[in-house]
Image 1 (cartoon, rainbow, N blue to C red):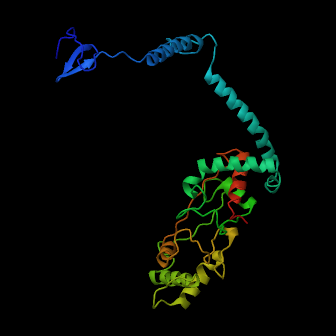
Image 2: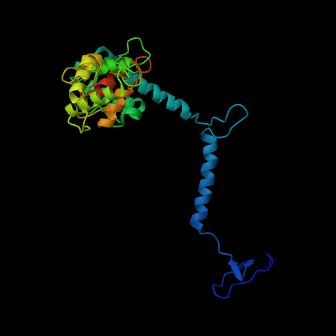
Image 3: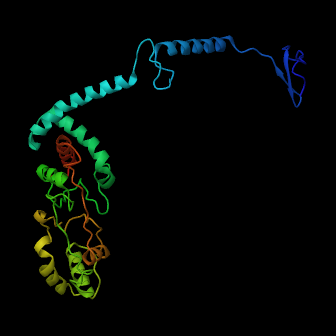
Length: 292
C-alpha cells in the first residue's frame, strides 16, 4: 500500500487521490455531497436540542428530565387510566344488565362483543380455536351440539364454573371407563360400541351381536345418553346421533372411549375474570351462531 502522504492526481478523472491504494486501485478524494453534510449537521443540532428539551441522559439513580419536563411513561399511564375509566362505565352497565337485554342495547352489545373477542383470544382460543371451531377433545362452539346447553344462561354458567373443575359449583358429568374398570368385558365393549356406531350411521364390524349391544346400551348408557341416543344436557351427556363427536367419530374412536373414557376439564373463570368480562364472553360465544 502506498504511503498515505503520497498523493497524486488521477489522470482519468482529474481528482486528487487520498494516497490509499489496494491492488492497483487508488482511492479518489471526492468530497461528500453538500446536501448530505448539511443533513448530517442538522441531525447533530437536533440531537443537542433534544438532549436539552427531553429526558435523555441517565444519571446514577435518575435521569435528566429536560427543559420541557416531558414524561412518556406518565402520559401512557394517564391514557391507560382514561381508557380504564371509559371501560369501567360500560363494564358497570354490563354487570347491571341481563344477558338477554345486553343484545337489545346497541352500545352495550358492541362493547360486549369487543370485550368478549379480546378475552376469548387471550383465554379460550388456545383450546377452542380462534373462531371457536374446536378440536379433538375441545367442543366446536359454532355448531348446535351443546353438551351442557347453548343458551346465553347455559354458556354463562359453564364459563363461570367450568366443567369437572375444582370449583364447588362446577358441572360434572363423568363417563365410566367400562373396559378399563372391568365393568364390561372386551366382547361387551365391542358389542355396545358397534351398536352405537350402527345407530349413528357408521360402519360396523361383521359378526358382532348388535342386539346384545343394544341391551348393554339400555342397561349401562341410556340413563345418561337417552333411550334414542339423543343425549341429556342436564347431566352433560352428549348426543350420540350428532354430526360431531368430541373424541372422533369412527368405530375405533367409540370403542376407545367406551373402554377408557376421556373426561375433559374446563377451568372456571369466575375467579379469573371480572364479571363484566365473563358476561361479555357469554354474549360473544353465543354470537358464533351455534347458541340456542
